[in-house]
Image 1 (spheres, helix red, strand yellow):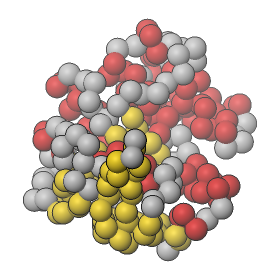
Image 2 (tube, helix red, strand yellow):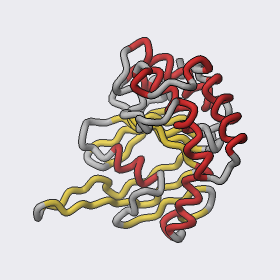
Image 3 (cartoon, one colour):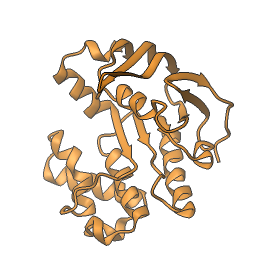
Length: 227
């Protein structure tokens, strides 16, 4: 379970003070599926970065499974990200000179798995997202939707309990967007917690509930029904 307690994030830019998160409180239960919605510049990506252990808040506490993650050492926080948290990005973040299978192998390699284990796990995950016949393709040889599915497979490589998704359908057409969201919904049914930032209401409708973020302030939106 995640718990944000009075979290503030303040940036100083050219002498101006920008409040990205303003005394935010949020509880995210295990196996929750939350869509974070709000206008551009409202603090959504900042919130996701803080949840992911990548951005120390100006003040406040972020707790995951009973641990205050920003009271951990840098090494312990890195281990927590590697073992518990998976990330999905709008821009896919695939390595251009690696095949689909090799891209999925990257987190497995970093966690010390053998080459045989890496290849077997990557192939299994690519098959799950419908890309068993594209394992040897480079990102440039794949459509945007296929690239995002490779990214989804890579996210699952170390079997994270939490998936943080930043505009995962932002670069996709409507048909491909729905396909990607169906896969994310399946990952949620596996028992994973998903926190997703999105501008798109149809994408947000896949979540169990919405959290609105406006001017750095969080508030609960209306519940939505998974499609």
